[in-house]
Amino acid sequence: MPNKKHSKSWNEIKTNDSWALFKIMSEFVSGFEKMSQIGPCVSIFGSARIKPDHPTYELTERIAKKIVASGYGVITGGGPGLMEAGNKGAHLAGGTSVGLNIELPFEQHYNPYIDSDKMLDFDYFFVRKVMFVKYSQGFVVMPGGFGTMDELFEAITLIQTGKIDKFPIILVGTKFWSGLFDWIKETLFHQYGNVSEKDLDLVKIVDHEDEVVEILDNFYKEYNLSPNF
Image 1 (cartoon, rainbow, N blue to C red):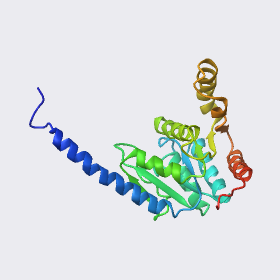
Image 2 (cartoon, one colour; image 1 turned 45 degrees about the vertical axis):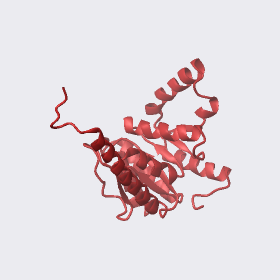
Image 3 (cartoon, rainbow, N blue to C red; image 1 turned 90 degrees about the vertical axis):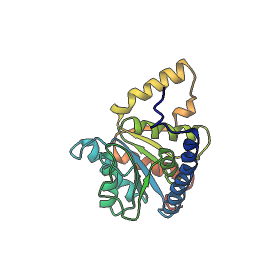
Protein backbone atom coordinates (compact mmCIF):
# COMPACT_ATOMS: atom_id res chain seq x y z
CA MET A 1 0.00 0.00 0.00
CA PRO A 2 1.28 3.51 -0.78
CA ASN A 3 2.16 5.77 2.13
CA LYS A 4 -0.80 8.18 2.08
CA LYS A 5 1.00 10.68 4.28
CA HIS A 6 3.62 11.33 1.60
CA SER A 7 1.80 10.46 -1.63
CA LYS A 8 0.29 13.16 -3.84
CA SER A 9 -3.26 13.03 -5.10
CA TRP A 10 -3.95 13.02 -8.83
CA ASN A 11 -5.44 16.50 -8.53
CA GLU A 12 -2.26 17.81 -6.87
CA ILE A 13 -0.15 16.35 -9.68
CA LYS A 14 -2.37 17.93 -12.34
CA THR A 15 -2.20 21.30 -10.54
CA ASN A 16 1.60 21.16 -10.35
CA ASP A 17 1.78 20.30 -14.05
CA SER A 18 -0.43 23.28 -14.89
CA TRP A 19 1.76 25.68 -12.93
CA ALA A 20 4.87 24.22 -14.58
CA LEU A 21 3.57 25.54 -17.91
CA PHE A 22 4.06 29.09 -16.65
CA LYS A 23 7.65 28.33 -15.65
CA ILE A 24 8.32 26.79 -19.07
CA MET A 25 6.73 29.78 -20.80
CA SER A 26 8.84 32.22 -18.76
CA GLU A 27 12.03 30.40 -19.74
CA PHE A 28 11.10 30.61 -23.42
CA VAL A 29 10.18 34.30 -23.23
CA SER A 30 13.31 35.27 -21.29
CA GLY A 31 15.49 33.20 -23.60
CA PHE A 32 14.02 34.63 -26.79
CA GLU A 33 14.33 38.19 -25.53
CA LYS A 34 18.00 37.85 -24.60
CA MET A 35 19.16 35.57 -27.39
CA SER A 36 17.57 37.63 -30.15
CA GLN A 37 20.03 40.41 -29.29
CA ILE A 38 23.30 38.46 -29.41
CA GLY A 39 24.06 38.43 -33.14
CA PRO A 40 25.50 35.48 -35.09
CA CYS A 41 27.06 32.79 -32.90
CA VAL A 42 28.46 29.27 -33.06
CA SER A 43 27.68 26.77 -30.30
CA ILE A 44 30.51 24.77 -28.78
CA PHE A 45 29.59 21.55 -26.96
CA GLY A 46 31.85 19.29 -24.91
CA SER A 47 32.59 17.62 -21.62
CA ALA A 48 32.27 19.44 -18.30
CA ARG A 49 34.88 17.11 -16.82
CA ILE A 50 37.97 17.98 -18.85
CA LYS A 51 40.45 20.10 -16.90
CA PRO A 52 42.27 23.27 -18.05
CA ASP A 53 45.62 21.46 -18.38
CA HIS A 54 44.22 18.97 -20.91
CA PRO A 55 45.19 19.41 -24.59
CA THR A 56 41.50 19.32 -25.62
CA TYR A 57 40.73 22.25 -23.31
CA GLU A 58 43.53 24.24 -24.95
CA LEU A 59 42.30 23.24 -28.42
CA THR A 60 38.75 24.33 -27.57
CA GLU A 61 40.03 27.70 -26.40
CA ARG A 62 41.95 28.18 -29.67
CA ILE A 63 38.89 27.19 -31.70
CA ALA A 64 36.75 29.77 -29.89
CA LYS A 65 39.32 32.49 -30.58
CA LYS A 66 39.32 31.59 -34.29
CA ILE A 67 35.53 31.60 -34.38
CA VAL A 68 35.47 35.11 -32.92
CA ALA A 69 38.09 36.26 -35.42
CA SER A 70 35.75 35.07 -38.22
CA GLY A 71 32.92 37.28 -37.01
CA TYR A 72 30.91 35.00 -34.76
CA GLY A 73 30.22 34.89 -31.05
CA VAL A 74 30.36 31.69 -29.00
CA ILE A 75 27.54 29.96 -27.13
CA THR A 76 28.25 27.18 -24.62
CA GLY A 77 26.37 25.40 -21.86
CA GLY A 78 27.96 27.88 -19.47
CA GLY A 79 29.60 25.33 -17.19
CA PRO A 80 33.15 24.10 -16.50
CA GLY A 81 35.44 21.97 -18.66
CA LEU A 82 35.24 22.46 -22.40
CA MET A 83 32.33 24.85 -22.01
CA GLU A 84 34.61 27.07 -19.96
CA ALA A 85 37.32 26.75 -22.61
CA GLY A 86 34.90 27.92 -25.30
CA ASN A 87 33.78 30.93 -23.29
CA LYS A 88 37.36 31.72 -22.29
CA GLY A 89 38.58 31.76 -25.89
CA ALA A 90 35.71 34.02 -26.95
CA HIS A 91 36.24 36.34 -23.98
CA LEU A 92 39.99 36.67 -24.48
CA ALA A 93 39.46 37.37 -28.19
CA GLY A 94 37.03 40.17 -27.37
CA GLY A 95 33.98 38.42 -28.81
CA THR A 96 30.47 37.64 -27.62
CA SER A 97 30.52 34.92 -24.93
CA VAL A 98 27.15 33.38 -24.04
CA GLY A 99 26.37 30.75 -21.38
CA LEU A 100 23.14 28.74 -21.27
CA ASN A 101 23.28 27.20 -17.83
CA ILE A 102 21.18 24.23 -16.71
CA GLU A 103 20.42 23.41 -13.09
CA LEU A 104 21.98 20.00 -12.31
CA PRO A 105 22.72 18.11 -9.09
CA PHE A 106 26.43 17.92 -9.99
CA GLU A 107 29.05 19.39 -12.32
CA GLN A 108 27.20 22.45 -13.52
CA HIS A 109 28.06 25.98 -12.42
CA TYR A 110 28.79 29.16 -14.33
CA ASN A 111 32.33 29.65 -15.56
CA PRO A 112 33.85 33.14 -15.16
CA TYR A 113 34.25 33.93 -18.88
CA ILE A 114 30.63 34.63 -19.82
CA ASP A 115 29.47 38.16 -20.60
CA SER A 116 27.56 39.42 -17.58
CA ASP A 117 24.46 40.25 -19.63
CA LYS A 118 24.55 36.95 -21.54
CA MET A 119 24.04 34.42 -18.75
CA LEU A 120 20.79 32.47 -18.92
CA ASP A 121 19.54 29.86 -16.45
CA PHE A 122 17.25 26.97 -17.39
CA ASP A 123 15.47 24.26 -15.44
CA TYR A 124 14.31 22.44 -18.59
CA PHE A 125 16.70 20.80 -21.04
CA PHE A 126 14.26 21.06 -23.93
CA VAL A 127 13.93 24.85 -23.56
CA ARG A 128 17.71 25.19 -23.45
CA LYS A 129 18.04 23.04 -26.59
CA VAL A 130 15.69 25.34 -28.48
CA MET A 131 17.95 28.29 -27.65
CA PHE A 132 21.04 26.47 -28.92
CA VAL A 133 19.40 25.48 -32.19
CA LYS A 134 17.46 28.67 -32.89
CA TYR A 135 20.36 31.06 -32.32
CA SER A 136 23.38 29.16 -33.64
CA GLN A 137 24.94 29.43 -37.09
CA GLY A 138 26.89 26.23 -36.52
CA PHE A 139 27.74 23.53 -33.97
CA VAL A 140 31.28 22.62 -32.96
CA VAL A 141 31.22 19.39 -30.97
CA MET A 142 34.22 18.51 -28.84
CA PRO A 143 34.71 15.20 -26.98
CA GLY A 144 32.07 14.72 -24.32
CA GLY A 145 29.65 12.37 -22.62
CA PHE A 146 25.93 11.63 -22.82
CA GLY A 147 24.93 15.31 -22.73
CA THR A 148 27.21 16.12 -25.65
CA MET A 149 25.87 13.13 -27.62
CA ASP A 150 22.32 14.25 -26.91
CA GLU A 151 22.99 17.75 -28.26
CA LEU A 152 24.77 16.36 -31.32
CA PHE A 153 22.04 13.93 -32.35
CA GLU A 154 19.31 16.46 -31.62
CA ALA A 155 20.90 18.83 -34.16
CA ILE A 156 21.40 16.06 -36.74
CA THR A 157 17.81 14.85 -36.38
CA LEU A 158 16.31 18.33 -36.73
CA ILE A 159 18.30 19.01 -39.90
CA GLN A 160 17.67 15.50 -41.29
CA THR A 161 13.91 15.89 -40.86
CA GLY A 162 13.81 19.43 -42.23
CA LYS A 163 12.60 20.96 -38.97
CA ILE A 164 15.44 23.50 -39.09
CA ASP A 165 17.65 24.84 -41.86
CA LYS A 166 20.94 23.12 -42.55
CA PHE A 167 24.01 24.51 -40.79
CA PRO A 168 27.53 23.15 -40.20
CA ILE A 169 28.01 20.39 -37.61
CA ILE A 170 31.72 19.94 -36.96
CA LEU A 171 33.12 17.22 -34.72
CA VAL A 172 36.61 17.87 -33.40
CA GLY A 173 38.83 14.88 -32.65
CA THR A 174 39.22 12.12 -35.23
CA LYS A 175 40.40 9.62 -32.62
CA PHE A 176 37.42 10.32 -30.38
CA TRP A 177 34.64 10.41 -33.00
CA SER A 178 35.73 7.99 -35.74
CA GLY A 179 34.64 4.81 -33.93
CA LEU A 180 31.11 6.12 -33.46
CA PHE A 181 30.73 7.28 -37.05
CA ASP A 182 32.35 4.13 -38.48
CA TRP A 183 29.59 2.22 -36.67
CA ILE A 184 26.94 4.58 -38.04
CA LYS A 185 28.23 4.10 -41.59
CA GLU A 186 28.70 0.34 -41.36
CA THR A 187 25.67 -0.62 -39.26
CA LEU A 188 23.02 2.07 -39.64
CA PHE A 189 23.76 2.83 -43.29
CA HIS A 190 25.22 -0.27 -44.98
CA GLN A 191 23.67 -3.09 -42.96
CA TYR A 192 20.25 -1.70 -42.06
CA GLY A 193 19.66 1.30 -44.29
CA ASN A 194 18.35 3.31 -41.35
CA VAL A 195 20.08 6.49 -42.52
CA SER A 196 20.79 7.84 -45.99
CA GLU A 197 24.08 8.81 -47.58
CA LYS A 198 23.15 12.49 -47.49
CA ASP A 199 22.51 12.18 -43.75
CA LEU A 200 26.14 11.17 -43.30
CA ASP A 201 27.23 14.32 -45.12
CA LEU A 202 25.67 16.50 -42.43
CA VAL A 203 28.70 15.95 -40.19
CA LYS A 204 32.38 16.77 -40.71
CA ILE A 205 35.17 15.38 -38.51
CA VAL A 206 38.35 17.43 -38.10
CA ASP A 207 41.34 17.82 -35.78
CA HIS A 208 42.57 21.41 -36.13
CA GLU A 209 41.09 24.82 -35.34
CA ASP A 210 41.82 26.10 -38.85
CA GLU A 211 39.67 23.30 -40.32
CA VAL A 212 36.74 24.36 -38.12
CA VAL A 213 36.84 27.95 -39.36
CA GLU A 214 37.36 26.84 -42.97
CA ILE A 215 34.19 24.72 -42.87
CA LEU A 216 32.15 27.54 -41.34
CA ASP A 217 33.43 30.11 -43.84
CA ASN A 218 33.00 27.82 -46.86
CA PHE A 219 29.45 26.94 -45.85
CA TYR A 220 28.32 30.54 -45.68
CA LYS A 221 30.16 31.46 -48.88
CA GLU A 222 28.47 28.57 -50.71
CA TYR A 223 25.04 29.82 -49.69
CA ASN A 224 26.00 33.45 -50.30
CA LEU A 225 25.58 34.29 -46.63
CA SER A 226 27.85 35.79 -44.02
CA PRO A 227 27.99 35.49 -40.23
CA ASN A 228 26.67 39.06 -40.02
CA PHE A 229 23.34 38.50 -41.83
